[in-house]
Length: 198
Image 1 (cartoon, rainbow, N blue to C red):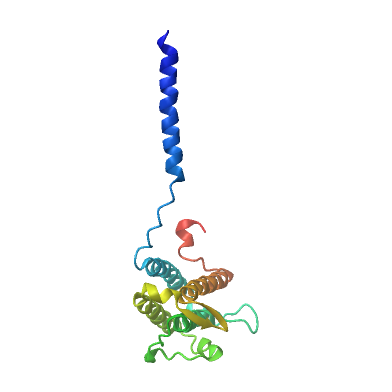
Image 2: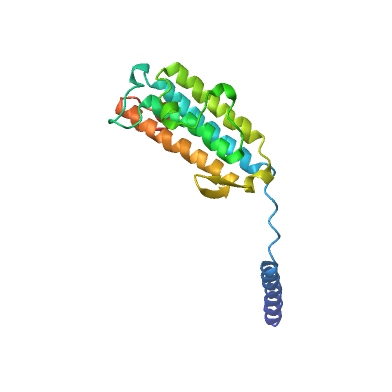
């Protein structure tokens, strides 16, 4: 029993040292965060692009060809026009971000109403979409990390190249949502909803 106080003293001392050691560890300045892996943004972007492309193309495939002229109201984009507008954005926003021109055979021009109404043919629209997605992918694969912080002007606003590419993903998801609403209005369930319940 006489050794108990000594044991407690030793135990407390040990705990004190451990606690102080832990506290000292916590007080150490945090190590400088290691730089993000090379091409981290580009790889993340391409992964998200693959997902939204797959959904858009599967939905375009699911909508019957005779519905491509359908529009919810006068003066609002039709199903065909909304799909073509997606391709328009793929070319235009990528150009704003990177300065890279769309391929000559894409027929792209900075004329939204004319581009959006260029065709109502389902098969042709699929080709236009696929070509526009491939252009985005090709450009992104050539973007260097140092390019991402480069300042560009987008509709009068100065922002980084990275921000404009992020905006492109937003544009894609916005208009995919539009096409989902159009499809459901015509009794078409988005293909991915049949498996995940959304």
